[in-house]
Image (cartoon, rainbow, N blue to C red; front, side, top):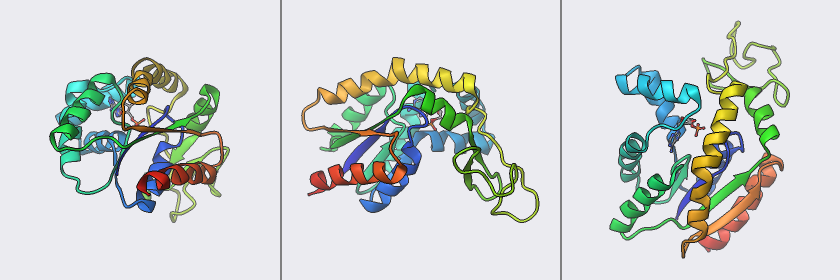
Length: 219
Ligand code: AMP
């Protein structure tokens, strides 16, 4: 099965992607994770991407397509795309590429959430730079305050530099202007099942709703 996970930043795509990919034996490919890895590598390309991400804007279609096409071609079997495609040109390239191999997108999973919920969720996110554990200042605080409670000593938690309020609002603008049209595009395509799930429910409820609908397709 080939599914695309969509939704505004902070809707819970990352959490759901991991669970759904495991449950349905799919490979999870996150464009955001791939770009963050490139950024951490310190390469020239990583520096260019970092500057765009820090502004909350979208990386250029040409670059995204180049990187994602390679990543997708390296996967065999079920695939869960998270964060790609995010613009109409990206969706068209994906369809063309899949079509060449006799494949197509089977399902689009759209997780929705209100703007203010998103801003609160994202600006409170923190993580440990040493072990990677994720926290939220209100919903999942560390027992050691601003330090990681899973690591020995005092490892200070960090915030993603595109998780500040002004950048989150810019990311929401990019989502509404450039990514929402992709949802309409898939809604109008034959053979694609669009599953809409309320991301304001608990993460467990969201997983259950998505699983129920995907099971029907996997049938
Ligand atoms: P994410 O972790 O999915 O929120 O992605 C973080 C940032 O990476 C976004 O704000 C964009 O700057 C960039 N990005 C990720 N995926 C894409 C994409 N498909 N097209 C353009 N930019 C992207």
